[in-house]
Length: 384
Ligand SMILES: *Cc1c(COP(=O)(O)O)cnc(C)c1O
Image (cartoon, rainbow, N blue to C red; front, side, top):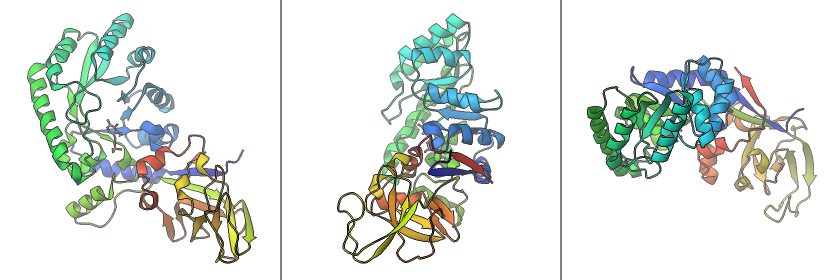
């Protein structure tokens, strides 16, 4: 059955972005592809097999359910899957049995990991998360020696894969001081741990923003989310990149396009309200096209009277409120539009483009949020 709107995923854009990121990283740095939030809305089952095809062998997800979904869609097992957030105890045993690695940031999870590893005679692959100043999850510096000792004395069942932390907003220079402090804290912790263990775990700290702005934070591994989907985390990071590389060419390509079609066209007399309520009043005879997309499809209601779409290569305004399943667009000045014509909500049509970042300009919807709100049930089609 056809859906009222669909998403296109560009394979060549995926390849382009992965290639760019790889060449930007140090030779020794592992590229972990962060695919939480349904691969930032692109669809784990669509994006991840393609990322695998273009060389990704390390993925990060937020919870066990995502790890399960990811594992089921990859062609081979030669991949590390790292869970950065939530795992229930029963999922912990699944993870351990399937060599899925996971963050440990509190003692209970560490003890449970040991319990299940012993029970199944397996080795749990763990990443010790340390607190450096984000104040979210992570062991305090004072706890680290005893945690490491615990891992060491159970090395048959606990393998220390890495030690990690997360920066609290490297995408904005306003956080410079805080980030600098975190980097310093991590360095000290790294030194302490290195003196304390024989095996050498990986150390990682950077996501997309730090990878670009503070290349020294790339260390052994980077956790890259938004960049691989074709966006710099903020315009600030893009400008930083431009300045540093002395270019104005954005090396990344948008992967996603979002399209629908015109469902109906009608003429509304001058002096009428359009749709629910009174938010749009016609001052002239107005031709509207009805698009079968609304907030239930991920088109934010804040885009009422603000959104823009492309039809026939021209840009048109959303007028009135965005409904649950449809919205109206003012096409008064284009008489050629017909029912069934393609409507672009995100993407290009002829010479024009609706970018993901344009939503940030109009309603402060950051690219991360817009993308992850694209519903899972919209069909996703892979294009060249
Ligand atoms: C989401 C996330 C990332 C990736 O962030 P981007 O800004 O999208 O690169 C990295 N690390 C952790 C812990 C995350 O939660």
